[in-house]
Image 1 (cartoon, one colour):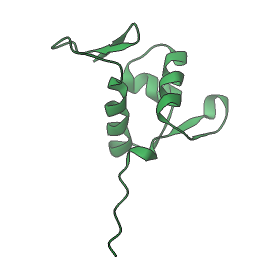
Image 2 (cartoon, rainbow, N blue to C red):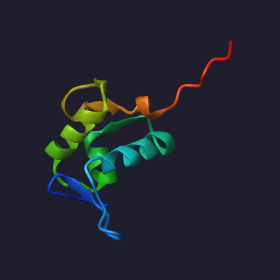
Image 3 (tube, rainbow, N blue to C red):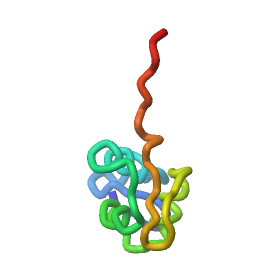
Length: 86
């Protein structure tokens, strides 16, 4: 998928999605790391604008650590917590 004019467009079937980044970030959290920087997200999502990536990350992550270039956004909310059996 590519991001164009605030939407994700599937290059194969032309499906439009406003939240196409969520599944990609969930995959990232499961396969790579439970936190991501703006630079890492830019590369992973294929987006050139750091401001766009910042808005996307802020919309899905309630937690961030660090300042400026050291800022990391938590992706741990994508991980299902094991249910406790009583």
